[in-house]
Amino acid sequence: MKHLLKLQDLSENEIADLLNLADQLKYEKKYGIPHPMLAGKSLGMIFEKSSTRTRVSFEVGMYDLGGQALFLSANDLQIGRGEPVSDTARVLSRYLDGIMIRTFAQEEVEGLAAHGSIPVINGLTDYCHPCQVLADLMTIRERKGYLDGLKLCFIGDGNNMANSLIVGGIKTGMTVSVACPAGHLPDAKIMRWASGTGRFTCTESVEQAAADADVLYTDVWASMGQEAEAEQRRQVFAGYQINDAVMALAHEGAMVLHCLPAHREEEITAAVFEAHADEIFDQAENRLHAQKAVLVRALKDAPLRGR
Ligand code: CP
Ligand code: NVA
Image (cartoon, rainbow, N blue to C red; front, side, top):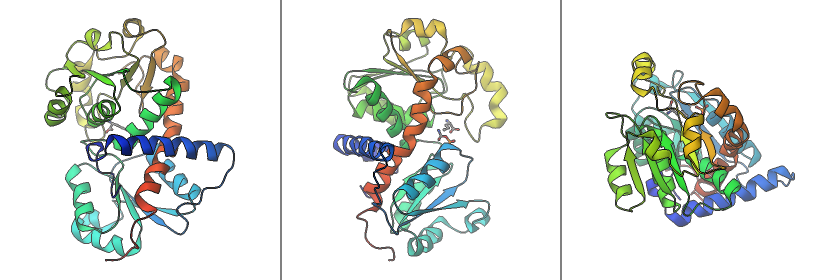
């Protein structure tokens, strides 16, 4: 794996390999078995949006692997003052062994990868959130024992999370149902691809999507960058909520996942959130293990930094 720009770029086998390595790294951390697979390597972490989980888990992950991580706020970098991505990529390729970037446009991430000579990992764009979904798949497999044949239901905005969950879910053999209001659908190209597998549905009906689900998933109604639309979105998304009535439609023992941060009583009730807090915080923990697997596969055997 050269980069992790979006899950579409990974084969089914590569995803399975990352999940297996993530399980192994979780076990090794739990039992204090050192795994300095990236000793001497440096990861730059560019953030153009806020983060709790992504920032901390990447930083701790690099430390666990024997390397180091540099937090690079876009506000402080010259990129924030207009230095082109192409120049930034070429400069950072001379210092670092890898870049993790959280930004708005997917094109910026793809541009970094195209112009630089080191691995680039997408830490969230408006289009997708591949690292989160690898942790989600790991969490589901850990709890259910398998992924193939499960029904994953996403309720809410057809946003970055929905896009990556559709791709990750379908690629690991799950059936994916999405419930979202008209005008807020996931990416059209991703939906076309998913529909072609015969294991994808998208509907405005929460009830239809949630029926017999094994995993229910939701995310905020207003993502980072959409703060000004928050009030209007509250009207549009009212009803697109995981609550007791929706849980009653899912399979008994259905899991509930949330990428966090959560807005209680908006996309999920406090009662459902707390009833499934063990799953949700396992999911947050698994960001660390899944991303360490990504870092190892992308950085370990990458050519030396430079041109
Ligand atoms: N889920 C997630 O990416 O969290 P952060 O925004 O805190 O990184
Ligand atoms: N859709 C959310 C995900 C946060 C992890 C956002 O982009 O803000």
